[in-house]
Amino acid sequence: MQLAGKHLYAVIYALNTKNDEHEAAIATLKEAHEEEVQQILSETREKILQSKISDEMDLKKRIQSLEESMELHDRMKRQALAEFESYRQRVEDMQLCTEAQVHGGSVCLGLWTGSSCVCGPVGTAAGNQYHVSLPVKL
Image (tube, rainbow, N blue to C red; front, side, top):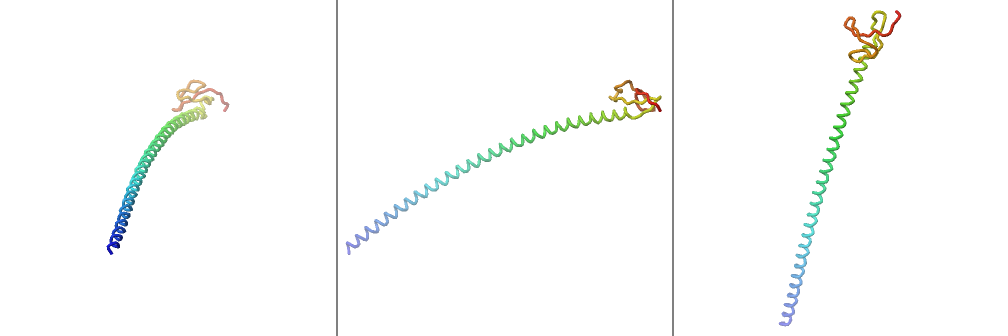
């Protein structure tokens, strides 16, 4: 029985040693796994941060582009409004000049420029400005 006890002791010792080796291997694997997870997390955080920075830069560029487009639009709008106002004033002046304002048998059909008709000096009658240039038979 003593031999069986020694043999049993040797088996238990071998099993305990194997168990300790397996636990050490498992602990090493756990540590390696945890390090790998931390490395992946670190890389992922860095990629996310780079992506956010890149996205932010893209948005800033887009905002700047839109602001430049708005400025261009405003300039073009002001220019178009100025051209329209000039055109409106010219049409209004032409209408004033081309209205048949009969005075002494003549009618002004010239182009009104604001202070005079392009075909000659301006006169006044009953508060209206006119230019006598074309004879008209009534």
